[in-house]
Length: 431
Image 1 (tube, helix red, strand yellow):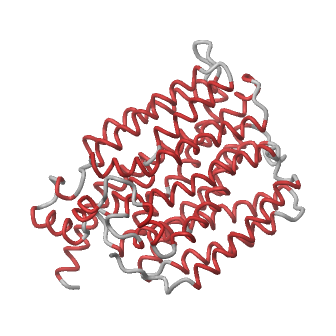
Image 2: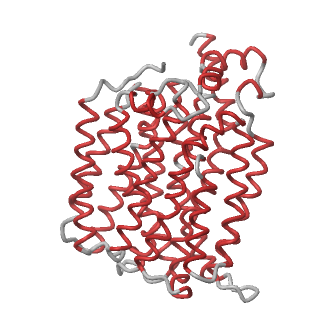
Image 3: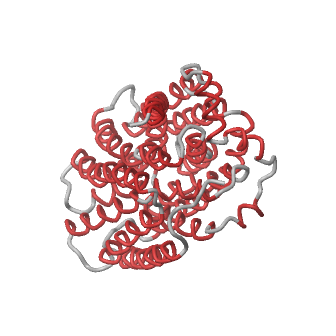
């Protein structure tokens, strides 16, 4: 092994352990605060008089404000610096989550969910952009995967903790679902403040790197190009001219619609399926597809980096997810339906890291902040639509409306897989 290879490995390991575990914690907190309404709904909906349709709207309205604010948020992150902007995001949403513990009507809950989306907007694309300041192309998918593992990991953590709170937190006369928002909102405020301590804005500000290491990373990863070439206005025309951006947007919309609707609805789907006999058992069952997804995401992303290939690593799981979704549209028993749902959830999660690595690699430095935020905003549009559709269908996995939805999703995702394969070789050089 060459000395340079040894130095690169040691440098990559230092950066990894300094940044990635902390970023994962931040995102776990974000996902928990985003989806805890799904667990609160197990008892909250009866207390506030929220029906399935209203709950679908309240769950999804988070993404309406998220979509509106996401691209501007990433533009501001480049101007203000990562530390300050990410701190603002986390502290704001932490306080809003706390306020959700004191709502008295469905309208108040809907308003706070809308504000929660506005507060959190920009976190996901902001951290993805931040990772490009530190990791080269052959490590980027793995870094995004570990960061993105926070999504299924949050569900693994949230399931037992949330159901435990719902069954045991009966203090001070507050309903357990209110304590759920209090207990799960405080970490966002604490860790938001810790961002100022643990995250440097860029390699130039990392005191734990040597001078030559800082200069080398700034040059090789083009950090200054991103900062200097990012325009003040949002470059929609340049984003639209980026090859493949329409396909990125359609694919992200479909996956966002499927995965995010389940983040909110899967506790109720499992609880009403007959597979679970208690709230705690529901939490344990919900853990299964997300624990499997966490492992599969990392293994798949490592393979994508090692092979320097993206498109087949996106299209393959897309085809698998399409098959599972089409089968879900057929009449099945509760156990078979749960296993097919687990397969579809896992396959969609596997695409996440290579998909966003390819997205980031496809945009020029000046359009990268707005570009990745725009694609993620389109995914968030799907994330708003999905919970609403499931709510209109009553949140029943066996209903004809949801079966039809899964059939259409399966066909559409399968078509995207074919178009992704045909659109290129799988490797796109960073501009």
